[in-house]
Image (tube, rainbow, N blue to C red):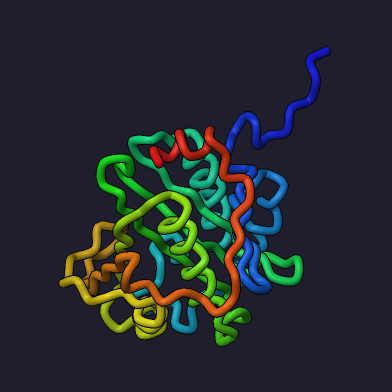
Length: 218
């Protein structure tokens, strides 16, 4: 009988764990998906009709969950050094409260990451939005060797703007959104390592193996 091998040896992202203060960030595994599905049924936005509401959140809860699970599985199969997205679940006190994505296209040549994130409404106001972004950026700059981090948010999304500026991002022009749904104007942001405002707590990274670095083009 073939000996059992941990999933991290088969899919290296599953071994990655980032900790910052009382937050833990790690890729979502299948065992996490029931909790994830329950989470995205809950309120994320104060105004569900606001322009900055994610297109996927506008679906009814059953459709939202079904499409979100398909999205998670697709990201795993599409992860290559040419292009990748890692959705990191955010846990505190053993409960899932949101997600912090990190993504790149041709990272080996461009050394640039992009990101997106969300928290359930009951997790707002505790500083988690800033800390989870800082943890992701520490991972990107210090462990992957990124030289640029880019982000964008819909005009009027003051909470997202505030997180970006607390991390040290500079305004970087505007663009029309490319996400599904109506095209809206977005503010672009750019961060480089020398501008990065680091968190007050240590950030620890475990499970960043040679196999995972190769998979990410780092």
